[in-house]
Image 1 (cartoon, rainbow, N blue to C red):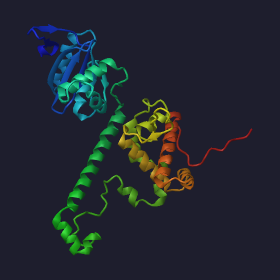
Image 2: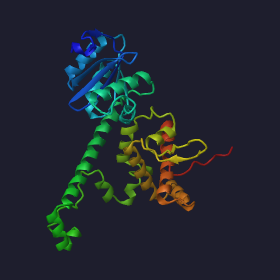
Image 3: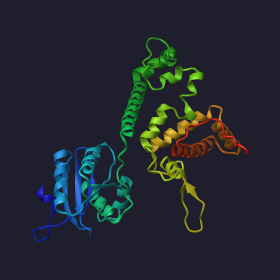
Image 4: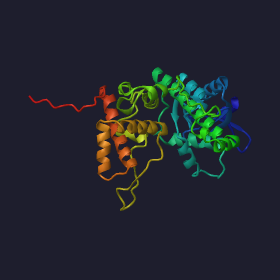
Length: 343
């Protein structure tokens, strides 16, 4: 690992230098780390196995050769969980650089090829020049537990959908369905999809519960499942300055597209959290189908000439403001509007 902090010059000599920024292109089995100094000169470029001992050796070596070392990682998923955790435990300054930014900025560097070494070099150089990259989130224990549970539920749903799709594409099943109409109706012993609700499924009790028991579960359209998804993504709302930031993260706020004399043009956002948008959309759709303020607002927007999708999106945007204000003021949701009291 001594070669981590040396760079070979054209004359064949090794010149030791101090690294102040290390960019890492994370992967599942291995990472690629590149260190640069304050002037952007490459100090080292090496492959690091995704192992605790290898990562700690890299941290120790880089810390010995520099007074202050900062780290930039371009992925915030399972592949770099161990890497980010070890850097935070060892009191290292870590920032996250979005992968989309790496792809777009790479075109400004020399060469058309794309390798792990080049991506790590781009990450380190951009993190050296820019100060707007945010550090990775370290959520509380409850939020981390909800993230594990909601991710596990998402994996189960994806596996179930994949199983159903594969079963539906089988040639023998398709031929039998067309030959026996009872199978298409879900009747008969030959039906290959179990239509009996699983008692352990999160939505089984909701499908079988009477209307008198559904109201407290579908609390303004956001029940325990969508509520867990929301908390697992946004945490304690400390990263959102106002309701607009929350709506922007969910892809509910339009993005300006002005140029020259053309002003007031907006487009749909492309960089947002799909799971958060999905949770907001389902909550609004559920609340819209039941009597209350959400349905009244939806009908009012629909009467103004908006299409169904537009009226639902307007309702979703408004509900994001209300939810953010409720959490900010630590207030519970009430279905009726407050009545102003006269002195």
